[in-house]
Image 1: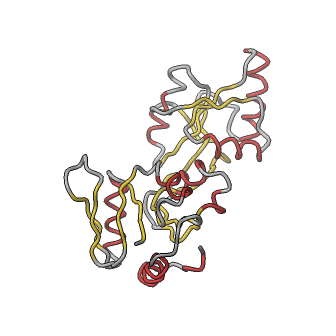
Image 2: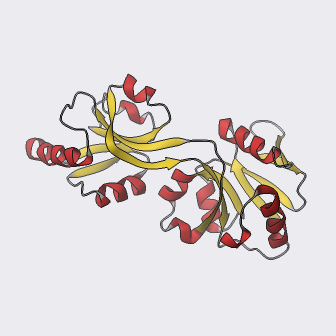
Image 3: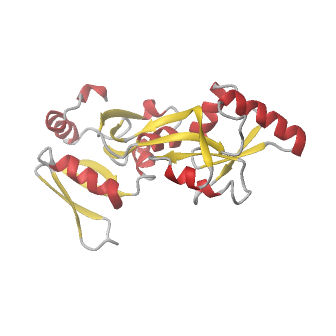
Length: 234
């Protein structure tokens, strides 16, 4: 049996169902919305596991599911050396969003990462502590800023409305996912011209550490033909 983990609710679940359905595999929830149970039609040996999108990278890394659908941003942020733990099989063409760095629109002289670095140094001299950047994506943001030579900042965790942290005075800048930029503009924030960290989309991944014996490998081969990915990527 091959276990497939997909998001348990919302637009991402619906689009995943549609993506598989267009390829002849019907996935559906069973029971109430509070029951994380599902069924599969059209693919023998495939078991559906419903999880939150944020849980799927962890379940893949642990090998508890063989395949999983989640955002590429979540895999890269939650898993160190992610490509050693999972194989990227198929970008799915939906769930698009950009992970970006944004600063207050009222900062006229801060438009690039170099400007941000200079502003962070000035902020520390003036205030005696580092400029705060609110984010949920600590690994991706930290690596990006390090690669681009930005120092004198600290990341502060945001699990709520990240765009509101600047207005609420709990951060001076943010790093967050955006699709249209409308929420950023509504909160008087602007994206740095070179502040794109990652372009995310829903992606089908395979777990390198999963047990591919006991019939899972033949199911993978069958799925690869129907879903259009290279099984040798694993």
